[in-house]
Image (tube, rainbow, N blue to C red; front, side):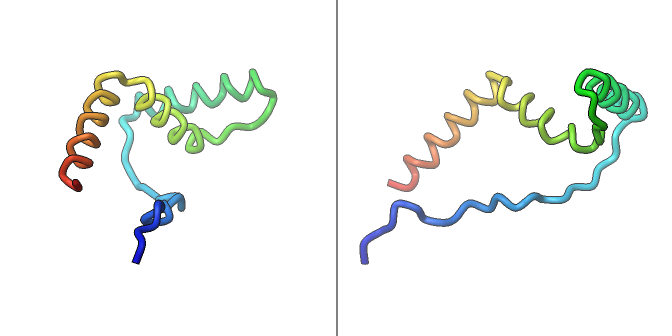
Length: 80
C-alpha cells in the first residue's frame, strides 16, 4: 500500500494546563492585561495572554530554534 504524505492529522485541540505563578509574575500579567485593555479599548482576560506570550517567547529564542532544528534533523536521519 502506498504511503500517504500526511501520516497523521495534527492534534490542534487546546490542552488545559494548571500551573502556579509567582505572585510578582501574576501581578505583572494583570498589569499587562490592564495596559493592553486601555490601548485596545477592550477587556482582556490575563489568562488568554499566556499562550501568545509563550509562543512569542519560543519563536524568538534563537538557541531553542537551533536546538530544535538539530533535534528534528537527527530524528529524520533515524527514520531513513
